Each structure stands twice: as structure tokens, then as C-alpha cells.
Length: 172
Image (cartoon, rainbow, N blue to C red; front, side, top):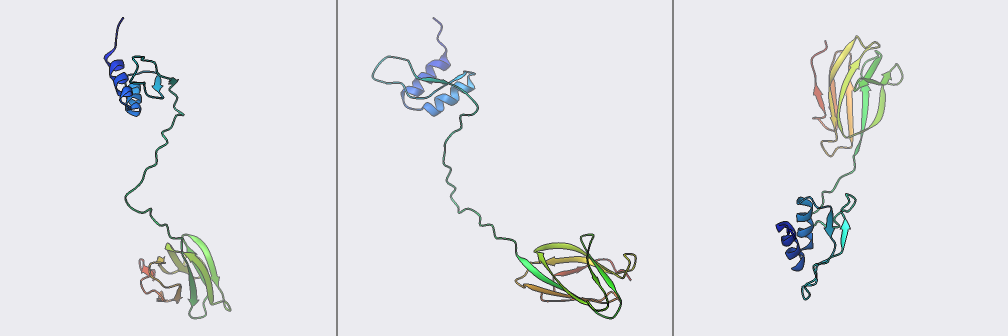
């Protein structure tokens, strides 16, 4: 009768209680069975309960990390207020989408924006008359309100967080 060295080693590992390692060895050797309990050392019987190996058998192992789990902070919302100086009509685009139209009587508008960077473009009535372009980066500081004033001459002022406005190329 032919005895395989892998089988002998696997039986020895199971006999000393290393069923997990012997199961891995059985898989590495190409066996289609995994030992599910150890062999009784006091008897010479080499029988073990064998279950067919299936990919649905998952190891039920608890992994304990030596550091605390990362705390995910909820996204903060910042009030952004746009104030148009002068009397000309203006349009505000945020990330390429029209956010607001500033007419004669609505020169001050407020919006809630989640923290992050936005591409901001301020134009006249048409999108071809660009007053100012740049990036609006809200939520970097602890300020909850950012006030942006703008004029047709391309002057942009920021209150609340002076680093929130990152100007782009000069439009005019």
C-alpha cells in the first residue's frame, strides 16, 4: 500500500491538535477534503471526520487591531452667502451648473454647501460675460458662514474664511 508523505504529515499535525494547519496543508496538496476534528492520540485509529471542501466555508476569526477604529466625522454644511455689488444682473455657476441669478431686487442669496472645493464662476447676464472665476473651498476652517461679495469689475471679497476663495485666471 502506497503512503503519501503529505498524508503522514497531515495526520501527525492533526494528532497534535493543529487541525487548522493540517487543513491548509490538505488544500495545498490538492486534497478535496478538510479535517474537521483531531485524531484521538491514545488509539492507533487514523480515522477522522472529513467534510468536503467548499468555498463557502469561511474562517470565523475575530481580528483585533492594536489601534482604535477611525472615527468618520459627518460632512459639515457651511452657509455661503453671495452678495452682488452694483446694479447689474449677475449669474453664479457652481461646478458648471447655474446656482443663482442676481437680479435687481435679489442681490443677496444664501445657500447651504457641504464642505469641499467648488469651481465658481461669476458672469453677467450671459455666460460669455465672465466677471470672476476661481475655486471656492469651504469647510477648511471652523467658520460656519462665508460671505462672498462680487462686482462687475471682477473684484471678489470674502468674509468669514479669507482662504475660502482661490482666484483663477483674470477674466477682465
